[in-house]
Image (tube, rainbow, N blue to C red):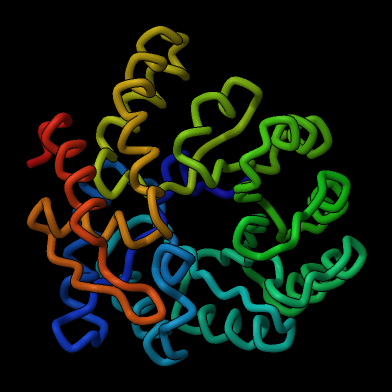
Length: 291
């Protein structure tokens, strides 16, 4: 079983004023996340604005983050082209990443057999542990529990980030896969409910802001203090919701900037948070004592 821990942060990619990748700011952010209890980092995932990064920018990000933190770095390398995904994965492996996050192909809308063949071919081509990523709200493609069950039999496919938002699908997957196949919630707001049915951890956006509190919630749940875990979950409910009030990562970048952690703007086609979103986030952060 891989040792990626329970609180994985899907890290934003900081940009400077010219919208170039700010590698120094990325290192500072990564170190902050480690200090606040992130057990691994996903770099160049959805939250990292992977569609607007060049291949060279991604590889440099993997290297500089890997060189400056002592927790696993998981590279988001998935595309809707199997061959290109393999090429991305091999390049990431060359700079020493610890694992791969691979999203279901978007736009193509593959059926379940096609999904199985896609992931199987990648796993056979790249000797690194793989976390599958199911996020039908973005890809238009839902990987069903029976497909996850088949893929879990492949040795280096070791985990799933499940972001369908469907707790019944969560339960069906957990029922079908081996115990050493780790299920991570892709939704902060569903993490505690999902842990109650066997979800192992979370690939989080909110941990940029409330990593300490999320670790406290995890520890309470594991210790059997369900009431304390529930109370923390309810305390964080507004920030869990409002970090997705518009398309991620618009709100989390805004929240970090409001907290004085400069991560810059976003590359088009995403734009910065408008005042209505900023005012909601500002109140959430004030309520949590973050600003």
